Image (cartoon, rainbow, N blue to C red; front, side):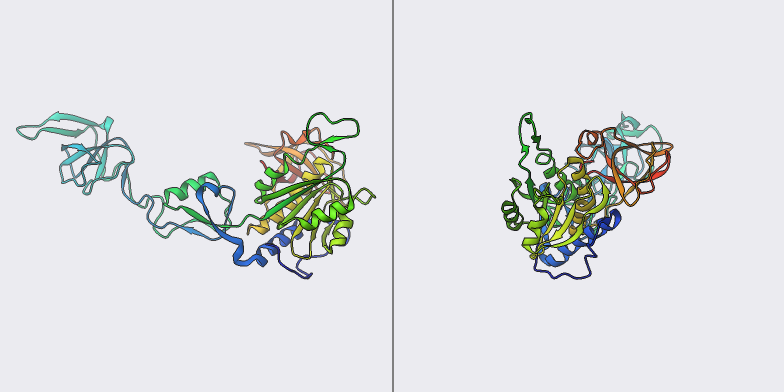
Length: 414
C-alpha cells in the first residue's frame, strides 16, 4: 500500500502532546489515506478458508434464492392435497412429483416433490390399511395447515438480496453463510502488511531472565494482536539499542505499517525518534496526553508507510496499540473508527489534569447494565492485569466517581 506522499492538512497537527481522542482521529485518517492511495491494488478476492477476520471490500449479494428449493423442516411425509393419503414406495429423494391424495416419506432438509402442499410430522401421522385396493393410507392425527413445516425457497434470502455490507469484518458465521449461498470466494480489502521491529538489549526470549534482563512480552503477543485488529504480520526483526541498526530496520521494513516496541523516549539509549528523523519521516502524533503510553508516536515515512512506535513498558505498549493501531488498521481496511462501549465504573479515580488514563478492566453485564471493574495490577510495566481484562477503561482527566459512566475500548483479543 505505501505510495509516495507529500504532507498536507489531512493528517492534522503533530505539535505537542496529542489529546487521546485526537490521537485516535489522526491514526484513523492516516489509515484511511493508506487505503485511498492504494486504489485498486487494495482489493482482492479471497477463498472462504482464508476469509475469517478479513474485511469486505464491497457488498455481497445472493446469486440465487437461499435455500434455492423448498425443503422439509421435519421428518415425516410430504403430502399433496387433503388426506388421507396413499403412501408411495421409496422416499422424497426418488419421488419427483405428487398428485393430490399422495404422500411420500421425507426427512429434514430434503427437497419437496413437485405438487407437495405440506409436511406431516412423523409423530402426527398414522398409517392404516385402506379399503379394497387403496393399500396403506396415511391419516393426520390433528388438522394439517397448508405448507406446514415447509421451508420455502428464498426463505433466508431472495436472489440479488444483499447478504453482507462492504466494511464487514468477516466471522466464521459470515463464511458459513457465504458457503450456503454457493460462493467460493469473497471480495476483501487486502490486509495491511505489518512489520514488527522489537528493540532492547535487555530483552531475552526464553527462560527466567537474569539480573537486569527482562523477558520478551511482545514477540508472542503482537502478531495475534495485529491480526485481531485487521493486519497481516509480514515479518518481525529483533534489534539491540543501536542507532544504525534502528535506522536500517525502520527503513528496510517492506510493509504498509511498521510497529516498533521500546526506544520511544528521549534518552541517549532511545533511538526511534532520531532514526525517524534521519529517514525523513514526518511525525503525525508526537506523544499522547495519556497514561500509560505517553511516549508513543505515529509517523509517516517518505514512501508513505506508517510507523507506530510503542513504548517499552508492556502495559503502556498495549494501551498505545489500542489508541493508535486499532484506529489506523480500521481506517486502512475501510472500517469506521472503532466504537467505545459505555459502562459504569465500580471504583473512584481522582483527577489527572490534562491526561486520559487507560486502565485494564473487565466488563460484566447484568440487568442493571454494564459494569467496568478495573484490574488490580495495572502499573505501566505490568501485564498481569490484562490476563482477565476485556477492555481498557478510558478515565477522563477529571476522574471518575463510583457508578459514573466511562468509555471503554476493547482489547484486540477480546
